[in-house]
Image (cartoon, rainbow, N blue to C red; front, side):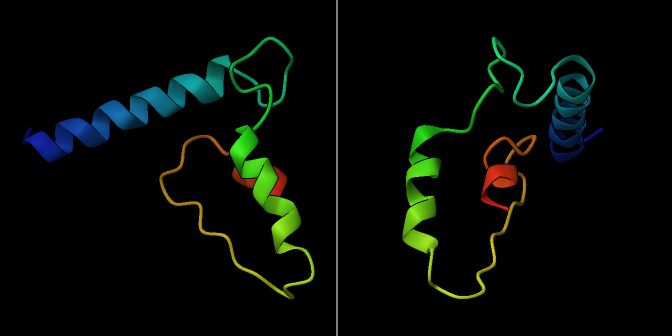
Length: 68
């Protein structure tokens, strides 16, 4: 396995572990709420019409789900 394959495998294992062992937005979890800075941006987007948000390799979705 080359270095890139190893990194991808480790990333997959990490996210699989998160999805199986943590629930989004459950109080007491590090996934309890999105990052405050992300939430501060949402009001700035109102009134801008249709916008697109790209969530590519950004983790388990704790920031992008509230934005959606």
